[in-house]
Amino acid sequence: MAKTPAAPSSNDAPSEGTALNGVPLGGPSPKGRPTPSRAEQEAARKRPLVADTKEAKARAKADLATQREKARIGMANGDQRYLPARDQGPQRKFVRDWVDAGWHLGEAVMPAMVVVILATFLPLPAVQYYAFVGLWIFIFFVIGDMVITSITVKRAVKKKFGEGRVEKGLGWYAAMRTVQMRFLRLPKPQVKRGQKPA
Image (cartoon, rainbow, N blue to C red):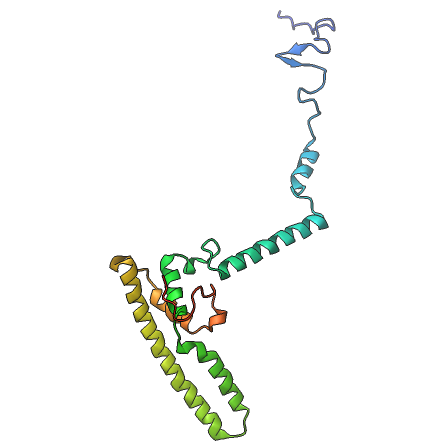
């Protein structure tokens, strides 16, 4: 009949500080600190990495405002690092300079509309009628100027950068810039009127 092995006596049990498989028993954790409980670990994960204080929020808000102002100034000055994708590249800069160097009818569209709006307040039907007719005639001339600008600017780009290197959409880009008042254009004009773009 097989005998069950006898339980080890207290003398056989490893004493405190004795290593079992290289790990000390009965002493402090090898890390030097007790293992955190599950609740403590979950609480640590939920804690934000950045202190949620008023000072931290105010500092982050101030930093963001500084970055936005820097980007606004950079974009206005034509700095390539801050320009949106539609304004980047040497061809787009050339087109902007080419448009900004000339005079265009589209710059007067907004003032003309203001004049027509003011004319509608006059109790004279004839003045109101001719103001609207004049505005539509002027708009047709503006559209013609936009078309001519689009064609000529594409020719200028081909001459400067080569026939096969012209980006798409340059004509429309130039035409839309002509209908903006000069002081409202972004990026701001970098050349004076009459100055030939480089």
